[in-house]
Length: 74
Picture 1 (cartoon, helix red, strand yellow):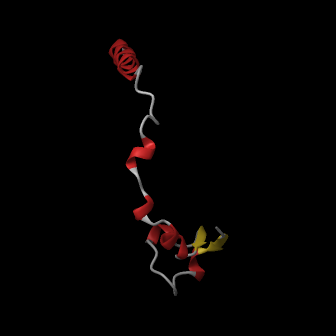
Picture 2 (spheres, helix red, strand yellow):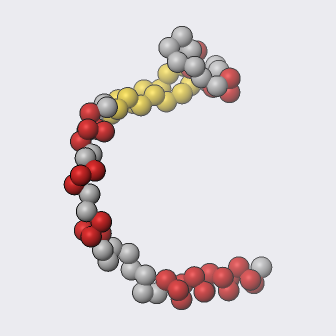
Picture 3 (spheres, one colour):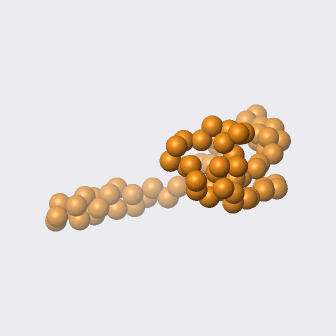
């Protein structure tokens, strides 16, 4: 995937796109990404069962309890 990244004065962009006033007279970053990327991600190939077991929630309850105890100290 190719991405073009440019830093440019926002005043040069105001004739092309509308920018918020807070961007006036500042350098802004422009990222150009091909719309072909959206075509490459086809949701038909998504299979939730492929992600089964990705998260390790075995100790999650204990970890959350410890976090709550930390918050209560303050």
